[in-house]
Image: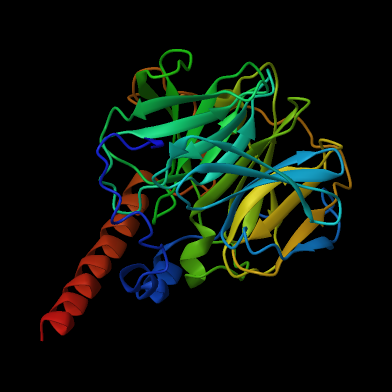
Length: 358
């Protein structure tokens, strides 16, 4: 019997999707309260093109990608075993690798410096998991499992950033765009349960880019991450946009403290996958659902070095500078935004419950 990645073994709620009514209902309020996003770097990336279409019935919920040469590694959001698919340049599956681990809610994919392929079993839509997990498929065919705990309670997350030195970073998925970045306190070890530290706070805001399953709210939700194989770039994506930072010396938190280039992505039903292509510069993105276009977004200019922001006081142990993607919103305004949207979420949730009970 496969080992379970979730220590509780409570798996009944793992496929409660983000497109639920309680999230999608108050989108008009989000549009009113949240400020505009910073402008894109207009010449940094070129026009997207479809490289190929993924049609294999074994990949209906594509959630994680890694670029390998002309092809990609891909994984599903779900399943009863850890499973990674190798696709060629025409999006055909040429190999499948598995590990004897039954994941709870796998969401992202990365490759470590030693060639280990890491599945991030970090999804938690209901924020009820005691631990999340990283499942490793080693080059020799063996596997490894490390469980992780947050210092401040459960979080939903869909993005894994694997630094060139092998340190993993998890980026949470937050309804109001206030994501956090966490890092394990110790190196990953098979069978261990490791505490994590919050090292960064980030703020995502509305961009106006269409797409995703939840309307405007999808512009705020971090759904995937990637680090280029040459260790020089980091990318995070939402349902609608990609953000790219230059990276130096595996300092992921420091890089994310700088100003990113924002890249509007093509409209897709549920875009959760992002990777750097084999040249370590272009972006590859895709979506859940079949057929799923594997879209190439070519880089058109070098990214300028991004200065790190100052470290804010009181951010927490080991905290790095917080990225401000909110156009300079002050704390009072941010508080009003959060309170207003939270109030509407509670109101809508109450109405939905009363309808079901009636």
